[in-house]
Length: 247
Image 1 (cartoon, rainbow, N blue to C red):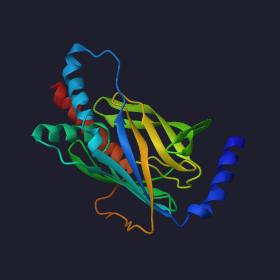
Image 2: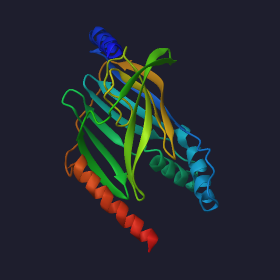
Image 3: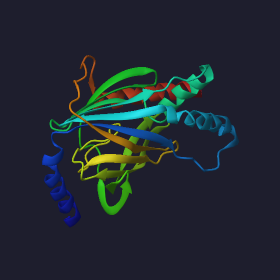
């Protein structure tokens, strides 16, 4: 509790300093090598995952922040040939890089646009979805003092619903309650996230640029659904996919 109060106090001290700044935050995405022994029948798949991971350096996750608003997306490089293009598309899906996220931390909601099971979705949900546990552990990331927090993330696929551990590092000196992708809810900008799943990855800060202003606009709400409706739709699509491969 005492540690949390210190972080909150630091956040309030810095808020006036940073409240007028618009930021462009560049991240890099790094695959976490899965060293577990693979069944022989899955070797081909994991070889493909390895090839897909080699295309990650050309993907440029970017977070734009102005006041309480932020927008996250991923800029893509141009593949050299058709095979590289297919591996790049695979990497985008394997490492959850196909999400565009608009976040309003003042009004407490986010809007995500992404594809799943070959369907396009626009989902609106409330913030505070992560049950963060704060730690005193700290490290320096790009000359910024960052603190550790842990939580978990639910993922729905054709095999069921899984909870994956998350390790995040945030900077109280930068009092923005946002981060890359849909990660939010910490008392400072999230500068690194590690998702520890079978196909794990790290989103890590590369650069922060201060700008005068940004043109952040709210996405079109046409066809938008709630997180609850999305979860139901994904479960149905996952079951259909499972039945297809079993028959």
